[in-house]
Image 1 (cartoon, rainbow, N blue to C red):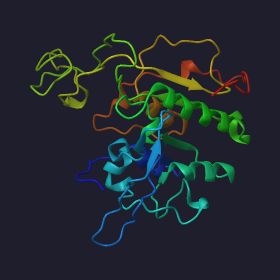
Image 2 (image 1 turned 60 degrees about the vertical axis):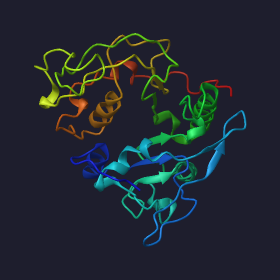
Image 3 (image 1 turned 45 degrees about the horizontal axis):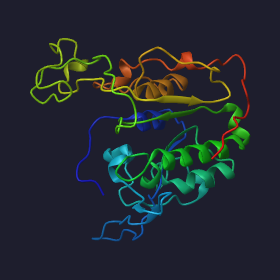
Amino acid sequence: MIAFSFSGQNIGDLLNANSVSWGWFQGGFTPSSPYYPGHPAQCNTTTNRLDGTPETAYAGYHNPFQFYASTNNQHHIAPASVAEVGHNGQANHIYDLSFFWKAALSGNLPAVSFLKAARAQDGHPSNSSPLDEQKFLVSTINRLQKLPEWNQMAVIIAWDDSDGWYDHVMGPIMNQSSSSADALTGAAACGTGADSLAGIQARCGYGPRLPLVVVSPYARENFVDSGVLDQSSITRFIEENWGLGRIGNGSFDVIAGDLSPLFNFTRIFASVLPLVE
């Protein structure tokens, strides 16, 4: 259940408008107590970390599409069938993580899939660890490599904040702001705000550097990109691959770095990676 919603469109809206199948799949999205009128769905299922600590599986604030009326599945309704996964239906493209594998094993993978681990495996220090996160990533990629679609697949792994696991180096200021609400370098201390994207303030960025990893038969081998990328570079990649256009209204996909240098689509590299859990 959400208490507020965003206006405007998101990448899901662009995919829908262009009839491209897609889905957001998140651990714990299946409710422990289903919705009925007057009683919102409850998601209190727990999963264990490697050390045995139980963690509530679902985190609603980790589900971006729930904050838009157009892509919301407020009552956590499951798809009517596996065939619905990735397409318009009662689940509205938002699913429990288990439906990703049901769709994959039935040959019904959406063209674009967003996977979010349960909290025990999401890498956040308060409820997970790098080893828990690694187990999720390795097991996921190992399973993906066994699918017939692997030779047409690109897996992009991204993190949303440093959580103290990564380095402390400050990234470049890509969106100037001069608002009293700025927090990154201090109030009104993020340049003049003259080149703020769409005139929107209080989005001083970027912050500390984060990993971004591409795993694909088309990924360049032993390659580290020196360009400036961010999470919205993934959005830009999806937009350009399917000719969707831009989100607009100040979205960072307009200024995001290009992921294409990480790929070589003229040949397939190592078809399977030897990943060990």
